[in-house]
Image 1 (cartoon, chains in turn brown, yellow):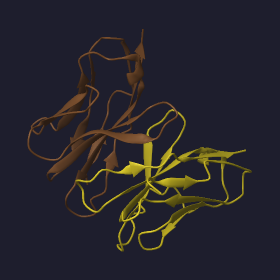
Image 2 (spheres, each protein chain N blue to C red):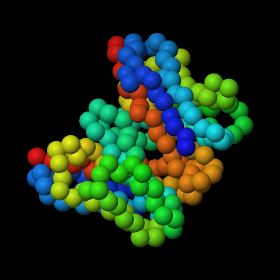
Image 3 (cartoon, chains in turn orange, blue):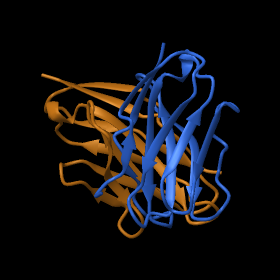
Image 4 (cartoon, each protein chain N blue to C red):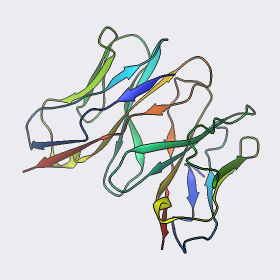
Length: 114
Length: 114
């Protein structure tokens, strides 16, 4: 069965600084990878996803994530964060065999301060 | 409706009472998930329905928890003899079939056991 590890429960950062939120996964088969975001008092929504093709995927608000198969990672990065990026970020993985269940990490809280 | 609908949005119940939470998935979505999110914590998987297959109940924390779904329609999560540690936001998500697809989340039901 697949699993996801988000080692950082909280990442504090100053506005306009770069940030990286780490995600590692474990799976014996090929995976699909997702980042979801939960803004304060809102529901979860998809931020970006890797299905196939280019290993670098981008979101509309400046985040990007790179699929690294050898390191089994899918870290989320942004070169310059805004106060509005303060949120909880969840990494998730699914596979095309068996039950195809989406498995989430425990989440990383990004705190952006002025 | 256009999205995943959960009801009630808030529920306060006395310890020992039973509660029933409802999820209306997006029409046509064969997969349905229930997650629990305790205050300040990550997503805890509870149960997963995929079409007419037997559900994956591996995340249910005790036999006080049960869930049902008829076909590809509404799902109900029932918690019997509620305890204070059951207090959390219960999230429902649905998606179309397949591991490559995005899961859409409802706004959740905030359960408070007093």
